[in-house]
Length: 127
Image (cartoon, rainbow, N blue to C red; front, side, top):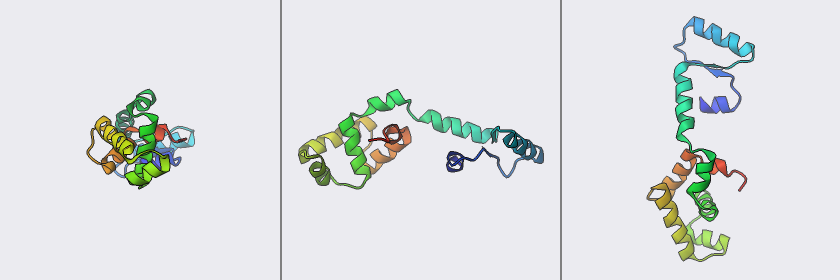
C-alpha cells in the first residue's frame, strides 16, 4: 500500500469499502483529490510519526558513523570498510560499537534495519 502511494496512487480503499465509499473515492480522485480509507490514513500517519524528524536524524550518528553504517548495509565487513576508508580496523570497530550503542542494537543487520526504520538513510540519500 505504501509502495503504491509512493509510486503515485491517488488513493487506497479497502475491498470491504461500501459502494458509496468507493463511488465517493473515485469522484474525489477524478476531481484532483485523494481517497484513503480511514484505517489506511491512520496507518500512514503512525508510520510517518515513527520516523524521526530530519533534525533528529542528523543528530543520531556522526557523518563517519553513517558512512560506516552505509558500507555495512552494502555488505562490507570491517576489514573491507577499513581498507575503503583508509582507517584502521580498530577504528572501524570502535565506530561500529558506537553505532550499535546509539541505535540500541546488537548487530549489523539490526543496525541497518533500525536505520531504515527511523529514516537515517533517507535523510542522507546524497551521501
